[in-house]
Image 1 (cartoon, one colour):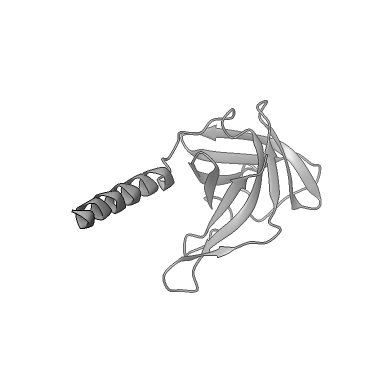
Image 2: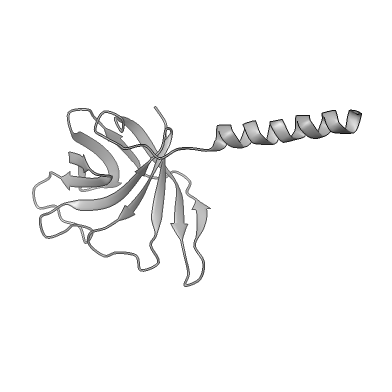
Length: 142
């Protein structure tokens, strides 16, 4: 009888622990993404299977509900505007004479956005694209 009790308790613990850790994809918008986010992990590949690596002191980006953002990614430009459309994030750095090899022909840096409750994952879709499908994970810090 004790064995059955332990087994049932263990199964319930596993079920509820997995349920709490399951993070559902959310349809993002300018209000949900508002806040400060830090790059904490990168999904990379050296020609083989992809894997996550930790990033220390990663870039920070702060999104505001009015469609603007600040970022410490580029020293020469730290602000701009953004939009989200069907899980696609577009950033437009708004500094005179600023350009990046990540921009598309219209001057936007675009990403596929997978948004969850406390983090999001970006995969760049403009400029020099990583052939292996590199992604970046940002965690909420405020």
